[in-house]
Structures are given as C-alpha cells and as structure tokens.
Image 1 (spheres, rainbow, N blue to C red):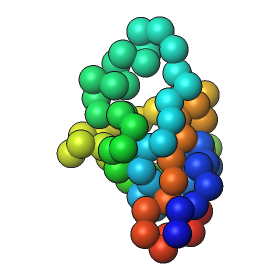
Image 2: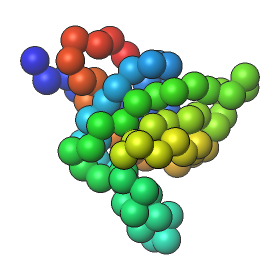
Image 3: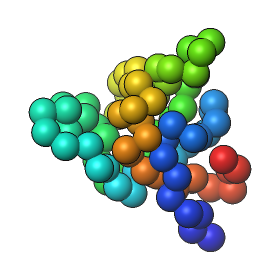
Length: 84
C-alpha cells in the first residue's frame, strides 16, 4: 500500500518517510544529498521547534534541522502503516 507523497514539513513527529523527490536546487541541494537526503532513503521526523520552524530530522544516522521553506521541497511517502 503506497501512500501519496507529502512534503516533509507536513509529516507528524515520530513518523518515518521514504524520500520520493527533492525539488531543492543549487548549493543547498548538493549539501542535502551529501547529508543523505537521497531518493529512497528513510527520514524520521524527530521534533519541531515550539513555533514549528525548524524541524529536526534523522537521516543516515545524522540529525539535521531544516527550515519549513527547505523541508517543504522534499517529498516522502509514509513507511509502513503510519499515518501522516
């Protein structure tokens, strides 16, 4: 059962998504790819700041915080039977 791809910025805390697309361009795209934000990799949503921006993610055993503007350009599908 494949779910529809959603932006990482819309995923709930504790959910895991498999990256299905990255629309970030330029130097930031290269940096994200180097950090493990590659199509097919799993990303776990760890926590949001009190105001919802930035959001902490775990990918490839690395924790990284992304702003909403960046995480809204990375798309993933929920892994397993998890909801959004």
